Image 1 (tube, one colour):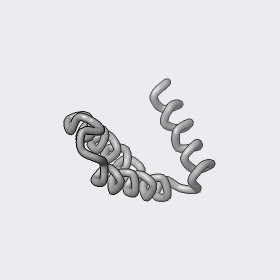
Image 2 (cartoon, helix red, strand yellow):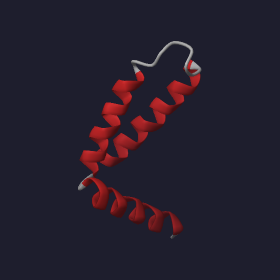
Image 3 (tube, one colour):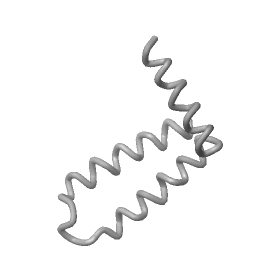
Image 4 (cartoon, helix red, strand yellow):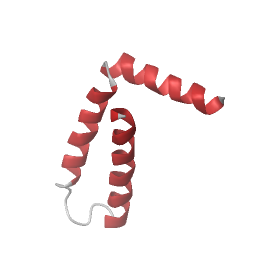
Amino acid sequence: MKDLEQAEHFFEWVNDTYGCPEALAQHFDATLEMLFYLEPHTFDPHEVREVVAALRGVVKVLRG
């Protein structure tokens, strides 16, 4: 039950803030593109890959 409430709250926030899940997914796509232009030695490559994987997972959920 709590998971369903969290999901509902999340999607309400997405709709209120971005208008629709696809708009937030587009922001995440831009974020992923920016990650390609990081300066060397700014972050550990493994950390960057973990962030990219998490963002891709959210994008997939938002796009259904």
